[in-house]
Amino acid sequence: MGKKSSPPPPATPDYQALAAQQADIDKDTAAMILDSSRINQTTPMGQQTWSQADDGRWSVDQTLSEGQQQMFDTAQGLNIGVGQAATDALGDYTSMIGAPLDFSGAPERMGPVQAGEINRSINPAEFGDRFDPSAVDPRAAAMEYVQGLDLSGLAAIPGSQDYGGQRQEVIDSMMNLSESRLNPQFAQQEEAMRNRLLNSGVREGTEAWNQAWDQFARERTGAYGEARDRAVLAGGQEQSRMLADALGIRGQGFGEQLAGGNFANQATNLANQYGMQVRGQDFGEAISAAQQGDSEALNRLNAEMAALGFENDAQALDFQQQIAASGMNEQQRNTAIQEMLMERQIPMNELAGIISASGQFGLPQFGQSSMNVPQYSGADVLGAGQAGFDAEMAKYNADTAGSNAKKGNMGQMGGALGSAAINTWGSDKRFKKNIEPIGKIKGHYFYVWDWNDKAKMYGVSTHPRVGVMAQEVQKTHPEAIVEIADGYMAVDYSQIWEEK
Image (tube, rainbow, N blue to C red; front, side, top):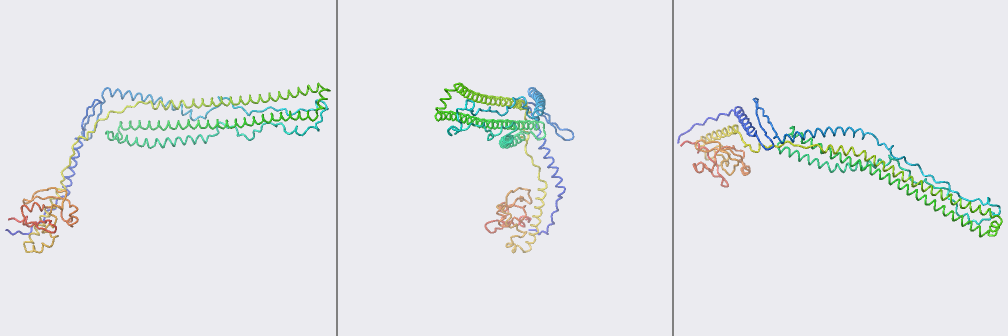
């Protein structure tokens, strides 16, 4: 066995040169992957061809088939025509929507209905002095004539601008309801379309990308416009309904007042007739004398009473006719206003129809060439250099420790597990993971690795991550194996470096 002097330490690697070499390898690998991904494609829809300029920049040329190009040109022309029509219609609609509704063409609203003056009594003095009013039974005056209809308790006649607040509430409520449904719907559609475009190879900023998002924006604008139109129409209908309800309530109250007045008048007439009967009963002889002595006065009395009843009946009939005419006028006015609102709504519907009628055409989507590109990974020059240096350092430490061991210190090394002469615990394969070979030195394979959890538990994870495998050394140099607690093995590197 020859005696060796202490070996010289290994030279430090040129890390800057290794890093530059690593950068060149990574750059060439990236260029290889990029070149492999530029695949020309030919489909029934057209062709996609890649080309590289002298400066290294890539460009792609897409050519549609004859049928696809014709479809694209047709759709573009249709979109341009529809867009111009929509612009013209939008100008008319904007000028119309900014102007207030003009109800001057609707029938004028009639004023309050005036009841005629009702004749209330007959003056018996006109028919002679044979009747003494002071002797009339008080029961004859138990009821008085109605002084006319009292309309002060009725609600005011509503105007066209009333219930505007309720109309706006309906509009806002319907818009909120529509937005609560449309917002998440279009948010999901937007996310889905973005994923679909990206998965289809369409990148942001391309013409296909912009066309897809323009179409999505038009659909979303159309949906919100339709929701707004429905809300405005519903608000107008609610305002019209409340106006009609208010007019109906007033008409019902007026009818009740009128019925009450008629009933009171009839009751008064009955009371007067009852009073006349009482007079006849209380002053039968006087009336009989008057009838006998002055038949002309009696005739005039009967005629006056008949005229009084006819006149009052005529007043009541006229009043009913005025009420009927007022109701007919209001119905005609409401019908005219509804027609005006419908006429105003038609341009909005036409504009929405024009916008939704725009043509749709998407460019053909070519397959993703990157799916067929093999994945390359450049050589880890920097890691290999570091691993080689670590191996040389391990060898140097082992040789140095072996030299010392040959001088009589091996007896103390058996208990010093952290000694450099013995890679304590660390050489056992059971402490290692991600093991990779790096070369062969003096007939022994050297590896780099990562320490596993068991190595960390036993406290060996601080040792170098390069060296031999104890299980392999056990087969060739069993004398270099040191068995330690729990059956794990370490290697006396001085035994495997020594020349024999």
